[in-house]
Each structure stands twice: as structure tokens, then as C-alpha cells.
Length: 182
Image (cartoon, rainbow, N blue to C red; front, side, top):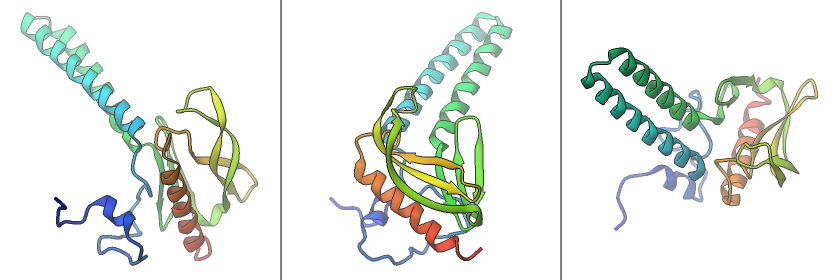
């Protein structure tokens, strides 16, 4: 049974390139959906946090309030880590390009981007030290430094090559539109 309202998936499935009414280019947006590996890891972390919160409640009812506070603090760190894990990725807006990592965020205005290109190179598998041959969307800065933005073996695109191609094309289109205007 198809639902009558517009979902995020249907916005990508349209053949026309007409901007949607809620399409605001001034807000930061991720040009792709988080992948199943990233969402699954965050769900497992939130499940672990629920068990830690349950342990904190049991410890608090037992009367050991400092231990319950430690468990509460651990649960808060796990929840914050899971939410940050879901925010990780490449974000675009009219102002530039932002790469959000677990512990850092880098923002680069469009006028400092010399180019974007998709290249075949060794990439990290799910962010682990092991490398495999794959594709990466590489950002070339004005000073010549190259930064990989997206890879097809990351937690967002593992076994989803079409999604990687669509996301790389979208980021390149944002660059083509806003690099010349600044």
C-alpha cells in the first residue's frame, strides 16, 4: 500500500531535477542517507546504553549512589557517541563542505575547493586499518592537499555502489554550482 506523503526516498527517485519546497540550500545537509552499517552500530550502542541505564537504576535502588552516577555518566557517553556516529559523514550547504568525524569537524568554503574527483585507490574498509581496492571521492584543496571525502567501503556505502555513485555525483554537483559563485 503506497503512502500518500512524500518521503526522503521518493525525493531521490524522481527523474526531474525540480527543487522540492523544503529544499533550503542554506542549511547543512548530508546528500545521502546513513548506511546500514552505521545505523546498526549506533543501534547496538544505544542498546548497550539501555543496559547500562538499567544497571544504574538497580545500583541506585541498592543504595550505592556514586556507582549509579558512574553508570549514568557511562550511559550518557555511549548515547552521545551513538548520536555523533549517526552525524558522521560529508555535509554540504551553500557556504561550503563539512566533513564530520567522530571527534572532529572540518569545514571548507567552496572557494577553497580546487576540485572533486572519483578515483580508484586503496580505501579503508569500514574505517578499520585494513585497506581494500575501492573508489573514493577525493577533494583537492587550493593548496594541493587531497582529502578523501567518501569511499565505497565506508559504513555508509558498503555493498551500496549505486548510493555511493549518487552521493558522489551530488557532492560534485554542489561543487559545480557553488564553487564559481564565491
